[in-house]
Amino acid sequence: MFKEFKEFIMKGNVVDLAVGVVIGTAFGKIVTSFVSDIIMPPIGLVLGGVDFSNLVITLKEAGEKTAAVTINYGLFLKTIIDFIIIALVIFLVIKGMNKLRRKNTAKEEEVVNEVGLLTEIRDLLKKK
Image 1 (cartoon, one colour):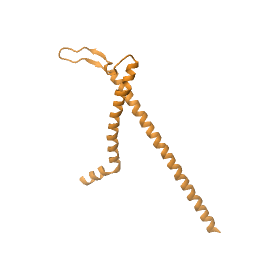
Image 2 (cartoon, rainbow, N blue to C red):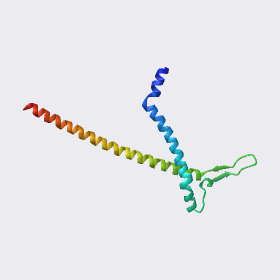
Image 3 (tube, helix red, strand yellow):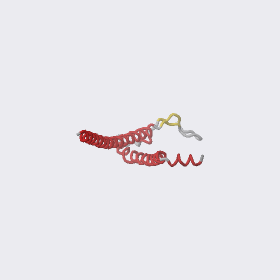
Image 4 (tube, rainbow, N blue to C red):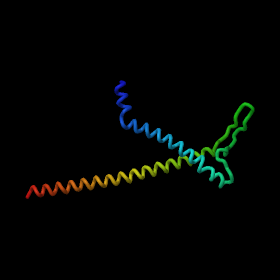
């Protein structure tokens, strides 16, 4: 069982997935910081000095022993902006990868066509 588990863990796909998750987590932190520290302050300034983290709807005021119950829609807006930026970057990366893949496919097709032509020429020469 240990041997099987070791083989499973050492497969390239599992290792690639683990690396992708770690890099994705780090990238998510970078995007969150970018949105919170660079994008949102100018937007808040344009909207009259609004701090999005303070945009809340209070459902119940804080009591002596209880915290206030709030809907934090400002933080939700920041999260939506995070998502849009991450989705855009992933889209651009995949678009670039597809473009490279198409170039490689075109080169492979050229090689296949050349091999086919060479095979035809060889066969014609054999017939003569």
